[in-house]
Length: 437
Image (tube, rainbow, N blue to C red):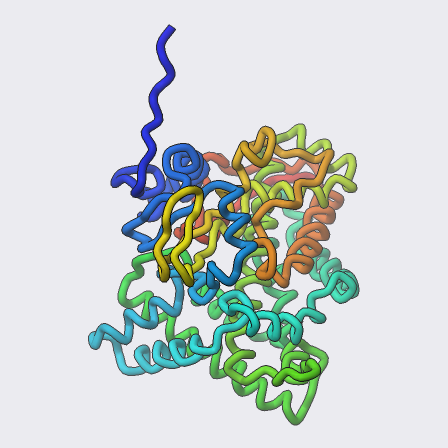
């Protein structure tokens, strides 16, 4: 009998480690980052990453405690160095970028001086949440369900007779994109442009390096987004409509100032990403799990009442947002390690969601009891304001797919799926299926 291998704790992310390869966006690690997370939980639950310029926190309890303390751990730089704002600063520091790109980067930096929701701290965050939370209450989301169902059925109608589909481009992407576009009052004729804008904002998240031309294209699209919605807000001031833009302009709380134009524009970016890209990835994550497990697919198809718990488990196992950043406002301690003031901290939600110290048998799907205390939507004051919307859209989407399509099976090797090149957002580029009518 041989001795078990000795695990040597580390203080820094080792060069060549699985997590280092993930940050470098190696396709195999991006496809399945969970081994990298497990390695961190055991060898370096609070470990310094030179590449991120941040301490990486990988255990559930530590992440939960940080999320409960927004005073010590500020959300001001929630996307860290892998964000459009950080890219904007790099553009401004590099005179080789064209003047029009530098103008858009400068605008992004100016707008980022008005922190909202995701990157706002108390008491600003409380004001913002109070002004907009009514738009995402369970009652309001339930009222939208007929719209979710109509769009879902229309999308399935387009491929139901073919016996095959590419589930991302034909379903998981256009469903939440159409929903959030409708909520924002974007007309159907602009859907292609709307998707381009969404892709621009998400491309800057979770990618530490981008080619020069890609950065130029990104900021030109970002500029188009701000121009369009700036004009639409001006129109809504004199011509109110039944959409979120009007709601944001008219939102009032006793004793609080209404939202400014800059605040609303920044909120729209967050709604665009949170209400679109992440829901696409959640739907894809649920369907990928079902395609990997024929018994699970059969069980859920036979009992659709299990779908809400399935969605929660896939949120836990395939968190569309793998992690977020915080910044320390004072000298503190995490997991027994001293952390200096003004340090960046990267909270690996997706790692905490698979921590055996919190979840029994964490890598399996549990349908008989809810494990809704996962971290996929954050916790505490900054819990995702659109969580109800994402859950309901996904439940409707999965329930309808399983109800209308039979003999669903993967048309590709699931172990070779290509995932989007980012270590923060998680989702496959394509998911091809076959089925019978």
